[in-house]
Amino acid sequence: MSFADPQSVTLSGTANSLPRVSSGANAGTFALTNDYATLALEVSHSYGKRTRRTIQLRQTKLSADPLIPAQNINPAMRVYMVVDAPSHGFTATEQKALVDALTAYLTASSGAKVTQLLGGEN
Image 1 (spheres, rainbow, N blue to C red):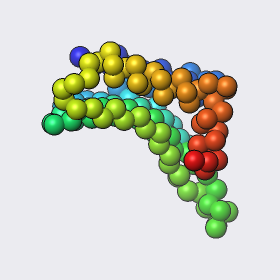
Image 2 (image 1 turned 180 degrees about the horizontal axis):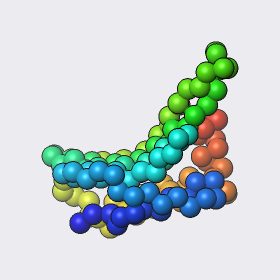
Image 3 (image 1 turned 135 degrees about the horizontal axis):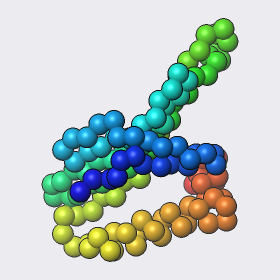
């Protein structure tokens, strides 16, 4: 089973429709690219003694080079969520409950914990 095509991701209040740009064994990528930026959603799974599921949102943009302002650079950033569980012992429901707990923690109080994380607090 695959994620639907396209996927919608809202960034800074703007909904972005990301069409599927690649699909392979246990992986898929959805992306929107223009002359200045790329927004991509990547989903992958690996199986073994542990099952590792990764979803990431990647953004690139065109920006002035801080060392040579007349030139541009294309910086990139990624935000990941990885669910790493043993192949046996935790049901999908139990795994989802842990994901839900973490995402609720991070987004509570208008994302105060994310702000602390990005500020380097530990």
